[in-house]
Length: 150
Picture 1 (cartoon, rainbow, N blue to C red):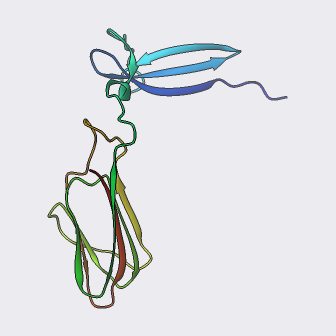
Picture 2 (picture 1 turned 45 degrees about the vertical axis):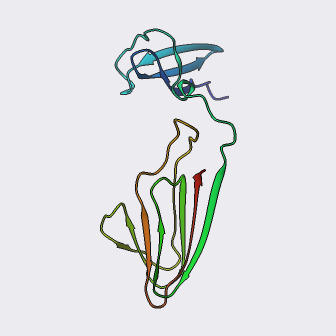
Picture 3 (picture 1 turned 180 degrees about the horizontal axis):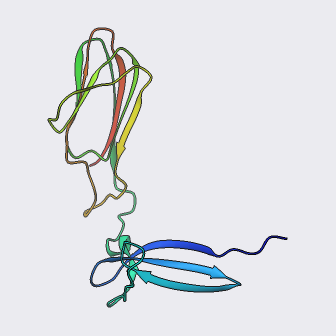
């Protein structure tokens, strides 16, 4: 019979000062909590109320979402403006390019699927700050989808 080993779980929590790491250790049926800075080794003493970091922002139930789906075959451009919640491209054929936020264009090979997304919506929600530009060349065939709050 193997000896029981400790079980550790970690969670990032927030207090009045900022975020810290709490480790929950269970050994021999007893649970022990240890608070450290985010480096996981320096002892930390919470200040004020301790909450889940995402609890500070109340979630908005079911914000309305607008979706787009565009297929580009051959030469042409699909642009997703800044502010999207998610962007996905699937390349079926050819070698289109992708430019994000005015950066250098990168060539993407056939068979590639890429997704960018954020997970928190509502008034204090996240959104992508950059525009995405997908440019097809002769022989390109790709699909671009996106979502954004409305």
